[in-house]
Image (cartoon, rainbow, N blue to C red):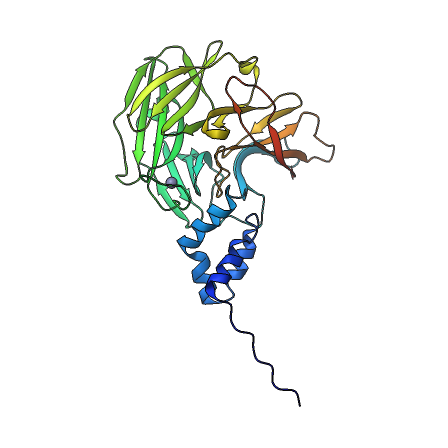
Length: 346
Ligand SMILES: [Zn+2]
């Protein structure tokens, strides 16, 4: 009679951690399955130390999905309505939350800044949403927003943060608005710790008509691309010094001819831009600089549509492009399209 087989010795927790850390980051379902194996693994995977090491090993967080705003056509009618929706790029799914009437403005380390379109006529409210924790925070009202053309950026406000695990830390919102009547550009800063907006800091300029695309953060400075008659320039807000200034753009051929252009952080931490031309044009873009729950300073994501892609079956084909390797200003070239997904909308 053969001797009874003994169960193999349990792996040391350090070895388990090393194995789990090497799970592919673009498929979060695997880590989830591992977390339900036993309480010890669940504690390990959900701990902040594991999250930090996972981020450090894998570098750029995976693209789990995008939040887009696009119009759909109701069947048997030409009536179109714009809705905000989540476009999954992995096994990750959003918790059930009504975001269709929220417009995505910016996102950072798993938090998304929306503008609540239901408050446009009354209070004009921003909403900061953390899908991981389902925390929804409504920012205090800014009455002047209704009179302004504006843009906003979400910033990490934790001092000395390495951004490896700051999804629960303090944030700031930098809001810049243009009062066209007074020719004044003003910046307001919201602090999540104090839950208030700062007093405005203003700069006089009658040439700027609006903003193009999202903002970009380089170091401690937030940049907004301003539209003027004939050409563009940058508005820079230095967070530490609380100063506003304009930065002239270098002469880039045809820069102002593009319908779509987005500022971003280029490789080596420089300010860069991404644009598209030729047969592709942007229908909408959301979550630039941040691909939603994963964050990447070097990527710009856009939902694009081929001009002649509408098939006859009533559906619309769109392509999801992930562009990496932004171009340093003054050095035009071609960005690499890393990822293209196709989806159909009715
Ligand atoms: Zn941070």
